[in-house]
Image 1 (cartoon, rainbow, N blue to C red):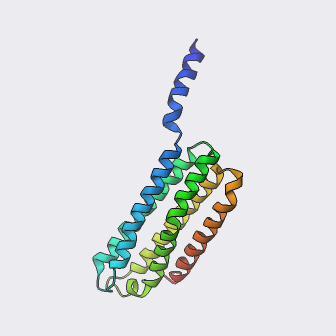
Image 2 (image 1 turned 90 degrees about the vertical axis):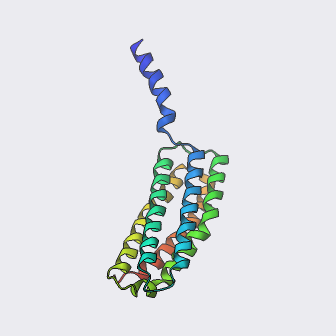
Length: 177
């Protein structure tokens, strides 16, 4: 009887421990929203004298990274995706892929502006943000691949290759700092 009670308690607790596909989709939506905020901050950051703008970009990058970490954790704690769920998650990631690449390209384009901020260390801060985002994005990519149905892995790897290339370009732009 004691073992049966433990199994019932374990079964009741499992849904609270395991993530859900709906949660992962919500996480991807959150990444997209935070990414849009970061994109807006980068667009608004046009003057080397804009210390607050540079710090705002850093804060927004940190917020994106936090959302990515949450998504990676939730994905890791989710069972393997069904075909339907895998396709839905792939579509959600495809929806934010262009924004991720555009944001990384904007960070590269703003390098001189970041360098011109009158307090030292801003490009180093950008480099650190890129490193954290790259590492945590890779963890999310790996978690998604581990849960994806076999027939969707090729499409997922195509997205991953594009994101990894954009991160490599951005990281290389700030390598000297």
